[in-house]
Image (cartoon, rainbow, N blue to C red; front, side):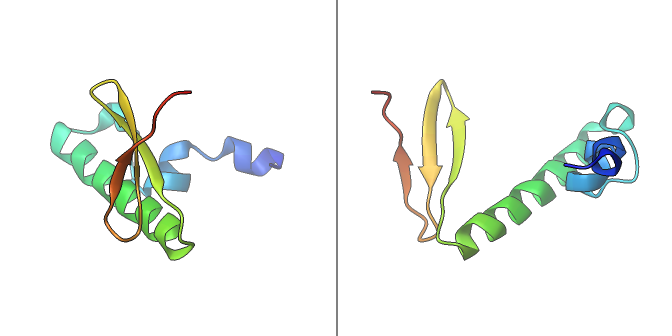
Length: 74
């Protein structure tokens, strides 16, 4: 990663938001997070890869076909 990319705030690079997350209302944060999740799914699913997320202390993989599997710790 070059120095210019490091200076660009994360909210501009990934969320596309026009202001800092610390300045957003809950509704604005929800809208930005939904947008980021949608783009992450589109990118991963277009390559046949899952997205991985945690919920209630467990880790899951969601696949392009809609399957959601719990990832077991070894």
